[in-house]
Amino acid sequence: MSKVKFQNYSGIKNEQHTPRAVAQSDLKNGYVVVRGFDSTGKETATVPTTDVLAKGELWFVDNVMDTPELDNYDDFVVKSGKFARLFNFENAKQEILEVSGDLVTGSLVVGDVMIADITAGKQGMYKKVTTETGYKVALKITGLNNIGGKGYDVVVTSI
Image (cartoon, rainbow, N blue to C red):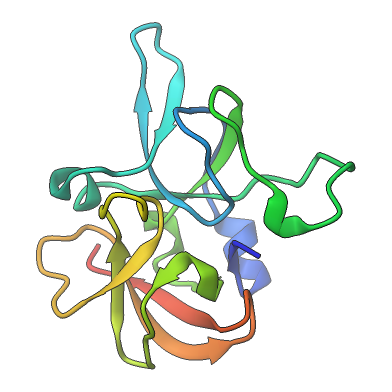
């Protein structure tokens, strides 16, 4: 179950999001994306593919599962060309977020730091980094949870 969510109500209450970014590729809930604009001025959601994009302002996808024909939350995907609801990591810097383990590459422990993964085939996911220097958004693991099998409680750092 791919998911990034606020642990506390205060995060939901104070969040900043946009519901009208058009997905430029298929996106799962929890994917880290870059918010941009196309030539007509419409908002876009694109997974970071370069180090420069991964070090910039990042958002995460959290759409409502509006397809009742799906029996499994894991099958939910925001298709390319559809609207994605994006939440700004910067506004979550004082909040605890919960990240499902299926979005994380490798095995991490409390104290590790995650950034956006730009590796081909893993774009939109998160990976461990030894230093978050130069990254506007990094997620420090403060605890473990059971979201997505093995999930992580994180706080936003590096902003």
